[in-house]
Image (cartoon, rainbow over all chains, first blue to last red; front, side, top):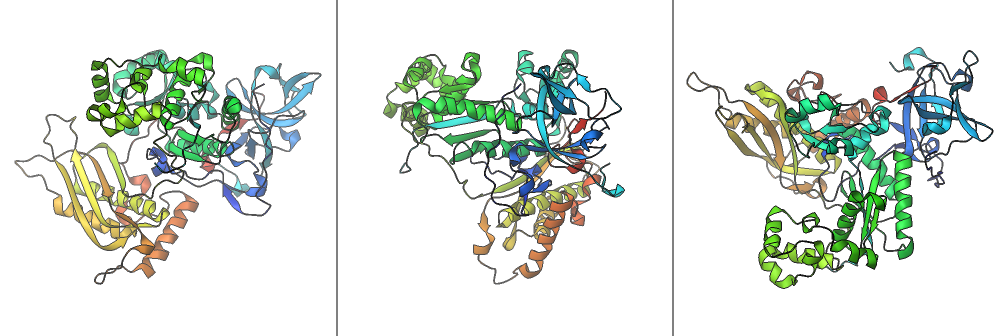
Length: 150
Length: 438
């Protein structure tokens, strides 16, 4: 398991102030070649995202996490600073693909599991062989068809 | 320098930064050679260790290594600056949790003031910093620590080149300082260019320690005051302060190569209008204005047999402004003044690049108003603000002046044929997490 630092960051205080996940940076030495390509699109409320630099959004594809209330095309907010615990929903690297799974201990052995009654419990034999990309903090699902992403 | 000199400075930078950004979102790229190309997919500007091992050099033109890349399975990408800029912001946000004093030096390098960290725990802190950046952002880094910026940069080079150091080298440690300075070649010192290197070699200077032990005063003659400064810095006497607040921008340029050569005036006019639009956005972001626009366009020196032409002209504005429409008008006037139509006895020039540049920026709020020909700021301000707000909300290019052409229809723009998705800034381009039996 890779080294993980658990987020213990103070919040700037609750509120609905929207923060971009990151802000543009101005370089002191070299002008940034990224200067012309900066975008400030994805914003989330501060109280939902305690650690913006470690937070990434992903789109879930597939139905294997239905038991966790996660459905095809939901958005997952993934925090790389969280340490996976027993029963955490995680994004792991499985067969060189980013994969949404349940992280479970069987005895002392961490394993990656599906969460869908129609599927067998375990996806991969030993979770210790796979890299945990991040822990899913929450997911977003639309209840109107149009809000869904393509 | 009258600035309080820090006693310990760290330089942290991302390893093969652009390639590492790509690897964070595509696990298939782990352990395979990866390169990232410059604008228009011209040459290799970032290479992973595996790609370097294949002999791919920095700045190598892509056409020369295309076959090698194909046969060796090198994964090749166009630069995705939106992604790299976002990831750069994330790494710097992590650095700021380790030191309140951070100078962002370039997109992938930052200096941190570690003076308040006790000497024995500096390396430990640096290891924690590396591990945290790696865990939180996925980016591998190296950290060099020294009493001056020049020594921090040198330490970073050592940390990168010596695997046994595990990515951290501390030259504030006297033993490490004595050990490494006589073992590293003088050419690795920050600021020693090719010309200085030749002079130094003629003087018998081989290692960094040799350079440090030169008498700085006579050196000033051969290597200028910069050489003298480097010697002081190598001795641990800080001459370069941390730039915590970047200086106000003095000039600004928007220049691009065309994806293919262009020969017609309409395309050139559209391109300079698009560049002027971008210039306006950049100026407004910082509350600055310019009183002139320099337009340039030229043919390519690579087209050896074709006729060459290079044009640069400056058009004045009545007063400082950041109004896109005023900038476009000035830029188009620049083209109108200099454009030459082809004639039967003179074939059309094949232009390869165009740009708009300004050299004298002023905070708009402080700039003097023109007595004659003052621009209508009461009208322009809200219009520009509305345009910027639309583009912030619906993405760059959602609203453009007609002169600049719709972004999707600009066929002259820089090519990014092999660019990955903008994983972190575009809701339609997010990474996919598979939730399926396969």
